[in-house]
Image (tube, rainbow, N blue to C red; front, side):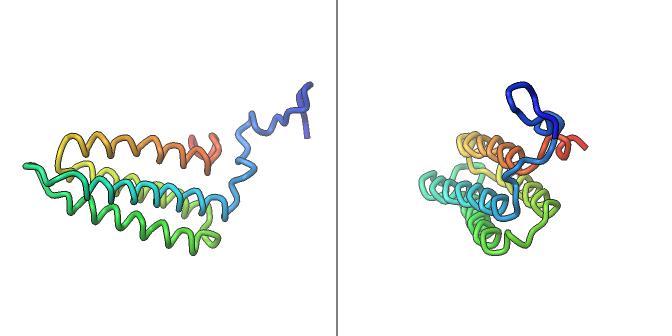
Length: 134
């Protein structure tokens, strides 16, 4: 293993997978993001009244799906491989995009759009740059 003068590992610079991205860690991280997004969606759906553009019921259903997904990922996450975690991130993006199109008001749309960086952070925690680019 080559190291730099200060003892740093060159593999990190070459796109090696993160050292902590084991299956249990990936599962707990994914479950935490799904749960946080689901709980925030439940809070938004209960606080914001129905607008002229739509109903907050769709938002509530999406939030409940997110919390249920968090429970399933936490329970079975150690059995999921890296491709399955990539599928979870894709699923999160599809659900989030659908909820954005069905949001009852522009305020809810803006609040939900703030969740996209959380999804990007999750992808950055789980995958190396080489896996993300190739």
